[in-house]
Length: 292
Image (cartoon, helix red, strand yellow):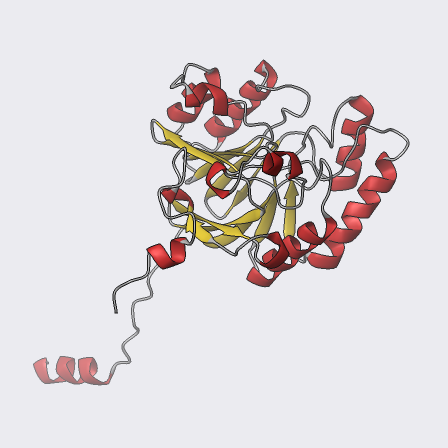
């Protein structure tokens, strides 16, 4: 009997154990503002670069059209949709900006042309993305906060959780150390790791109570006034997009400045910017060069 068991062990095919796939393993890109006013060459180059990175999807933080002119709104949406179709093959999630939506008619046309409501959520693998609307307000109104809390309660087991709203109304109070606004309490309660905005055409990032607040700056919207005031890279004023890697419950963001006529091609990990850059803004690649 012992001999027979031994032979069975020797000649029975052994099946290698296959590890269960990670709950999350994907990339996405964040596309910044285009308008106020649009810089076509910059925006087109940003889109081409994102497309070449081949993310699983793109999140657009809003202000895709110039807007605020009822006679031109349809043509403006047709124009930007043609640009997206030319350059982006990835799934594209839209967020409403104040240039996209300013009254009820523009809100209806936003939904018609983008295919998205003003607020919604979506899941990718085990990650949760909640898209909120503050296109016509500065802070998030009570209805948006109720929607947010309902989605976070509904998908309590999701990880990681990311929330998006166009206007970074949080930037001023956080700069003063004030975390008393209702949104912050909700994000902490449900373990949301990131709140991401756009609007100001500058990169912003600060961390409070374990929540990283970040604004993607301009991906093709004008920054001429900021540059005239002497603002530059160290103040977050540079053309860029953001590349995100989600693995398990962790999200890592890499900020990519355009090169050539759009900038100097600097790249840095988002966590190396907390209120201000914590690296050599001349060339972080040189400053971080390993010894050889």
